[in-house]
Length: 437
Image (cartoon, rainbow, N blue to C red):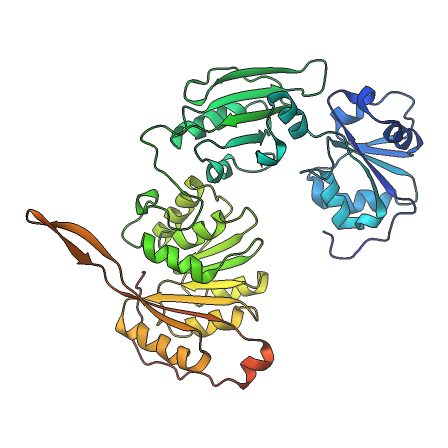
């Protein structure tokens, strides 16, 4: 969205959804809006679908598109504008950008059936039970978070090469037996589809306008990844710096991610907390801060493989690397899994956290535990000892092997007024620690 709100257009902007069937598939209202428009804005393919009776000046979208939208709208604000969009403009379409720029009151949206509606109609899939993943302008790796046995997915392709990319990704993630159907030019006379199985996909690239239907089927040896926090430890590449599965599940429970929220994962290790935070909802965001460049690269690989390539990884020591982050966005939650006793770290995280936000810190050392005790006495919250034991062979029998207990402090930051009246904890005189729990 532009920094300065633009002046409203002199006339409502008509946003007309158009399908592969072109002019013949439009309603009477949509045709009238296009005939009356003095300026017609859209992609070259969409503009070419209009007949000569649409006499307005035809203007293609700038590249890059989003930064050029305010200028283009301002240039023609005194004229009647019609914008062409593929299918439903408000479903992964230009309608969102226009609503954010101009406000919904300045738009007259005339939707057309989306490619998803057409695909579900052809397949006999209930739309409400079908998950949609778009790979238009987005990395294919984000599909991985949606792979579950028996799920039906519709993938919006970026171009003709997307089906082959998706087939390779499914196979690499243990979903090679999944059935794939590529539906092309939905709604037009040239509509067609090809069918196959991901692990043996050999179809040549077809039409660039395509949707991929996937019946998810996992191979027998595929690692099962659930939809809730606490993925198996073997899902991660790591060097031992990993918040273990049961502690991770308890930590995410304390962090309580909600759609759209931002997490700072300080002392990222293998990135497991940030990754599983982002896996809870497609709109969740996270930044993982890790001082070791080798581990930082490993975090990025884990995020990519587990379906959250949007995880931002910052390489550098905390708290010094946090100051730049604080200028960009205020976190809704902060997790500290390593380096708790670094001078000023806890203070910097607390200061950056928004009022009402949550902070969770884990440690296994007495020095860090003493520091958490000071902050607990000052700010309250919950101080918890987490202990996990695993059954292991003991000769011919079975016994329990106790893992190191983890001390966890979780707290909700009070409002500014409440925080001002609370005492500050005394700084702990302890050495710097790099523990990761």
